[in-house]
Amino acid sequence: MPITSAIILLITVLATAFLSGIFGMAGGLILMGVLLSLLSVPQAMVAHGLLQMLANGWRCYLLRTSIQRRVLAYYCVGTVLAIGLLFFVAFRPSRPVVLLLLGLVPFLIWLPKSVFRLDAQNPAHAVLAGFLVTGLNTFAGVAGPILDIFFVRTTLTRHQIVATKSVTQLIAHFVKVIFWSGLAFGALSDNKGLLIVLLLAIPFSMTGTWVGGFVLDRLSDKSFLRWVRGLVTGIGIVFLGRAMMTWFGG
Image (cartoon, rainbow, N blue to C red; front, side, top):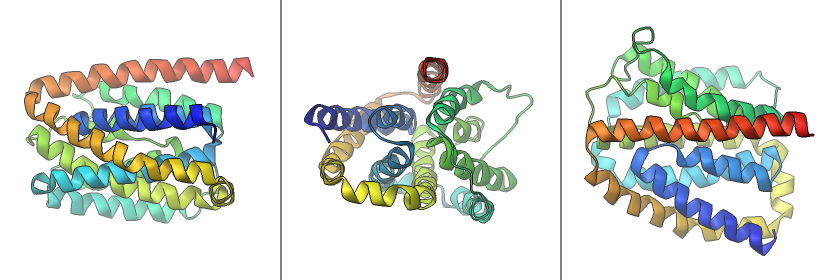
């Protein structure tokens, strides 16, 4: 991997881990976009999954006392159902399709709450979240906005939301890595430069997540949800533009 690309990736890992440390999402969307600019789709999916597993795992540890285990248990039931379906799926999306999905996913948080009255504290809804998030994360690379739909109506605090979502994302990214590893393993194993950069990214990811936690402590629950909506909507618009450019620009 060229030095310039390596530097860009490390800075991106730091910045996106910081964002995710605050909001529990958004950082993964940006990181996926940068990886798609530097790597093939299978490589980007696996690299993104590994980096996000690290970031979310560290965030889980930092906020471990706020994790809602009951919500997580039902979520895992949905994850198992999704894995069973993915086992029979041979489809792998192309770069334009992934960019389009990345652009559309953020707008899911604007779905009318009066129509989609979803609550992760409801067992059936938590199972549905596990199924949808695992499936969408596997194909688009990220699924934070759809996961957020299940948390905006809960009575959980911002720390409980970020902590619980971190565990669900850790699981979802693990499934994604397994799903794409067959196509990416050879290319990644031959790209020693990329493997070194991924190792160097570990302290960057941990530092960004840690610093983001301090900002999270200073936000109110109301401002937290407002910032999430605005941030991911802006990111979605950028990805839709990139998808159109890729599709029609060749």
